[in-house]
Image (tube, rainbow, N blue to C red; front, side, top):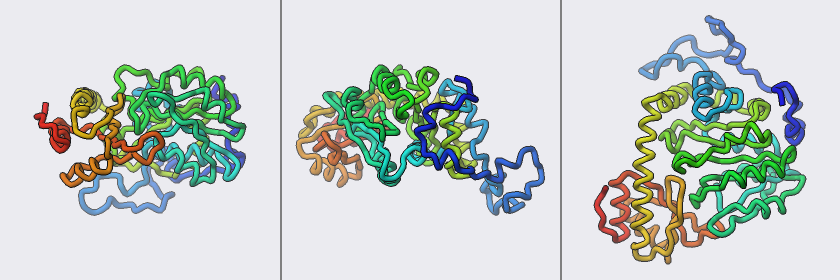
Length: 362
């Protein structure tokens, strides 16, 4: 399909979004102007050492950052939407496609909670096809529950909070079955920790109803900068830009992202990922010996999901020693489970010590 041919899936978006006149920001209209008198900004830089240019609104989609992300993920720049973390992209997708009281999304719990939060905030219902054995996504069960009201299907791989990977074949099966009916959204926030696992972005050329979420919060250590990316057909990106806030990426955050994605930054990220993977294996081997640990589930992410005989007790024990982990026991199928992020070697040694395993740092 050429870029000018209307994408059939857009017929599934909210008609009022398609018909609306999008906001045109002052920065979008600036062009090559050198005297900026169109945005009611201060003509002077701020006091102190805040940095140059902060008196001006940033570019809505910083070209240098957008191009670098396109290069990193192997797609065209027009297929990239940069936003405030993956959470913003999730919210934008639901707002663009789901009508209150009429449309639905589909998820496979236990999974990332923001999919359901975004849907319910919009007034969309949530269809659930629970994960099966070994926390696997059951594509057939998912497809059996999907109706004409379903606009978005979320697949998290590696899944949060279980850490399990979803095979590319499952993603492709969903995309094929839902062609022109629903957008399959693959959340790859943790993919950098999954070894040589292929990104669903490699399938974008074959499936127009596919979108991929990536983030710099995890592997690139920029959780505080809030830089996330949606990869999709250019017309899906254009649709979401209609309703995105005028200036979603603060200039310092864009600068931090470009620094993290420089050759030196990428090399450092890879070194740290390698360290985390070694530490993940170290904890996975050690934790089963801890008193009260019933299971340590395989993980392709930067965390482990661990089942305890008494998770609340383990949680309180760790907290009393200044170690905070995530209680995920409220998720279906994860009773008495804690999610433990992989820390530095020293932090992991402290965790093991707190659980009665006196192992020195690697």
